[in-house]
Image 1: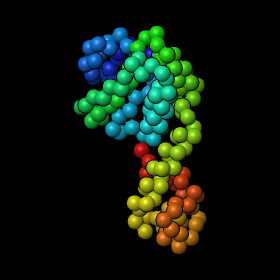
Image 2 (image 1 turned 180 degrees about the vertical axis):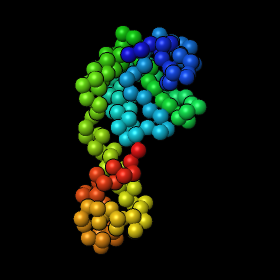
Image 3 (image 1 turned 90 degrees about the horizontal axis):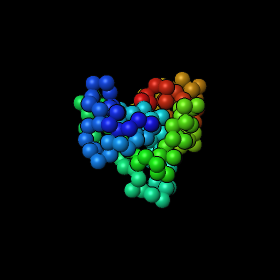
Image 4 (image 1 turned 180 degrees about the horizontal axis):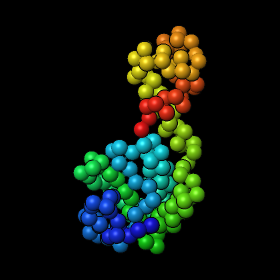
Length: 159
């Protein structure tokens, strides 16, 4: 993990901008932003949940910033030598081997996103999805999204 004073959201930004008291703190491995995809969101939420379980909340801090490119972004700064640093080091090592911190949570986030898309889709759009999944068009009247449509929706609409 990088020290905050050596970190910037992009190569076009200043390093260590703001957070003057935490310049030597470390940037946790998962961040979030307005345009984040589902995996980024799920990993952010999993990291945050893990940190909330620690008994030393004063050793980490969520920092939110406006940004010229993504609109806004969030990072978590952790105090060196703390349980939060130990936890985030483990999360970083886990991400080096596999990009998903928590498969169950990621699946839940994907399902919820697909259901929201299904619920907002027009009948014509639902029929197209059902046709692609080889399901009868009559299921377009169902409020519940058929599981067979999940991957099609994720491939087509999820960001």
